[in-house]
Each structure stands twice: as C-alpha cells, then as structure tokens.
Image (spheres, rainbow, N blue to C red):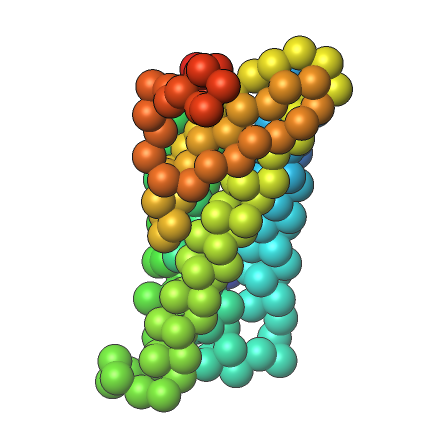
Length: 195
C-alpha cells in the first residue's frame, strides 16, 4: 500500500498538467494568425492528456508495483522532456510536474534497482519520449498553407535534420536539408526565397 505522500506526488502533477493543457489550448485557439504547423497543437494537447491518464491509472489500488513504476516513469520522462523543450512557454510547470512524478516513481521502485519491473519502468520512459519525438517529427512537417498569399519557414527535426518550406497561394513546397539563400532555376527565377 502506498503512503499519502506518494499519492500526493502523483495527484499534484495531474492537476498541474490538466491546467497547463487547458491554458495551452485556450491560448493557441485564440492565436491569429494560425501557425503553419497546425497539427502540432492537437498532438501536444493529446500528449499532455495521455500523461494525465497514465498518472491517474497509476493511482488505482489494483495496480502492481511494477505497473505503477512503469506508468509513472513514462509520465515523468514525457513531462520532463516536453517541459524542457517548451521552457520558454508552458515548460516550467511541466518540468515541476515531471519532477514530482519522477519522485513518485523513485518511491515506487522495488529494491534492488535492477529488477525486471524497474527495467520495465526504464523502457516505458524511453517509449514515452520516443512517442513525443516521433510526434514532433511528423506533425512539424504537416504544414498548412494559407489559401492566399505567401509565407516561408523551416525547422530542424530531432532525428531527420533541417527542413524548410514555402507557401504560395495555398501551394506548399517542402524541402529537406539545409536552407540556402536561394538558387536560380533554368528560367532565371530565384527559388526558395526567404530562407
């Protein structure tokens, strides 16, 4: 049976993440103009909701120590990594929530340290971070161009490297690799402007 302090170390991050998720969605929905990486927004909101569910399930009394360890380790890793990546916006409360979930994970670890259940906790943490990175890789490249006008931008994937894009009246040109200041095509037109 878990002590009250451990349950508080799980319950408080649940509350923090619910509030941060709600504020994040409220702020982004009211943004104008909409960011071109429009699919990243629902991914982050869903990922935060997943962290809440994982932590809530770990509080259920019928869960074994191994299941609690795995669930809390996944939530701790996911929240800490997302918090660090988003430190300039919603990240600080997520880092705090992740640190608390990590403390709850440590309290749930059976001894000795290298047991199958503890290794399962480590694996679940790696999976949670892998899902986060994969989600950013995929949704960051799902660019939504405005129907009228032009825009350009770019970014750098965690695993796939840099990319850039330009939109012209709803048409997307996406390019992998590093961006150059422009190139001249066979008709003498500058390609990839604005990089």
